[in-house]
Image (cartoon, rainbow, N blue to C red; front, top):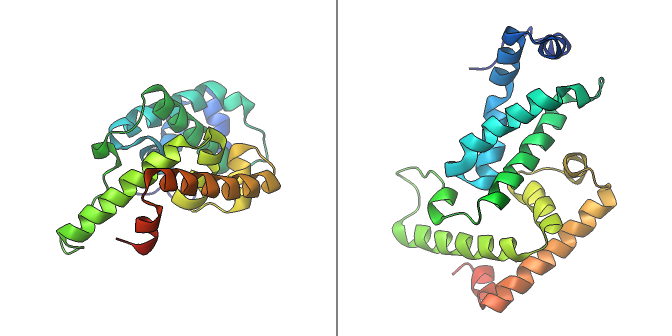
Length: 190
């Protein structure tokens, strides 16, 4: 259930800065789903709750650094993404169960799911081997559907650098897939 339409973000942020617990609760309720979603996509289901909690803790500690007039949701997204990357890096690679996606019962059959899972495993392994700066923009661009401008806002990089990192990152992932001997298989969808 979402927050009421009369949500006044500036007033809520001011209340949070003053230590108002009701304002803090409103802020968390408004953004908890977004933060959890980012955390789950970046560091997996098993670590998402820890990353989400750490995000709100960091926001609580750093709210004074948020610039008035900036878009709070963009700032929070950036914090959530960075915390999730930190959690993922500190705790090592994801187990296969962490990256599982919920599937409907009437979805694809076992063979298709097995092939998709295998492809995803190779893609994750290849992505894990590229430079972190490339991996970050690739995740933002392809996994989170962010535009170049949005990815630039999250990473703090110029748009041209984001475009360059996406291009170089794609080449690096393809190179890793070729080294694994699966690039042609994935391209053909087998």
